[in-house]
Length: 244
Image (cartoon, rainbow, N blue to C red; front, side, top):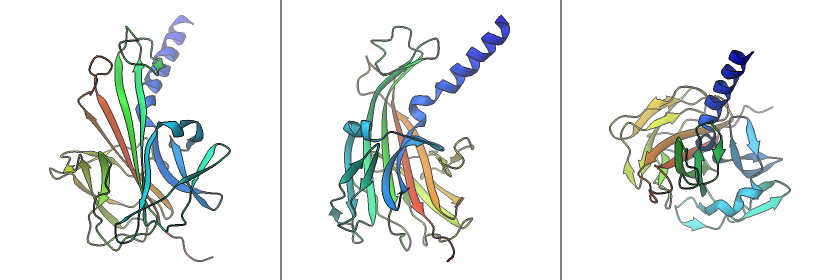
């Protein structure tokens, strides 16, 4: 019995290991409107109570000029007001300090408050959503430390067609960046590794919502509280299905 309990405890600790950094933000359709989502895989959590952690939400029109894209809350969901017709939406979140103790439990505190912290970091989330699919490459969106940018000559319209993206960190290509094809429908898949210019070509996974993910760790800005800064960025878009 004790051996079984130890195995279960170890499995639980392993499952918790990536909890704080696994969750991301992205945009998706909910009830006929576009909503900001906080979650991981099929898990869709209460985003409204996390809105105070948002540091920016905005849009770009078809010419790349900034336009307003305010959020309207309803229950536990936050919908985007599309009155100004953004072609691209962006959002950024500072999810704060998190530390995992030796027993595998996560605390929303820095390592200075968790003496036996095995992992500690500040967790930042970014999202880019293509409201209107571009013809080809896009310019980077302003204000996102980590982002996934479409750079191919053409943008796919169908599942399995190739999509070339580039991962940028602080405006520069991130060599050997890790990209996941879809954080919603295949969150546990192996990451694809970008080339020296931060580029990778992958087949589009879904004829519907797609949410690509990239992750990166950088030096901490508050070293006594965290051992690293963790960045998680998503790129989401929707491919239209055939007419009914």
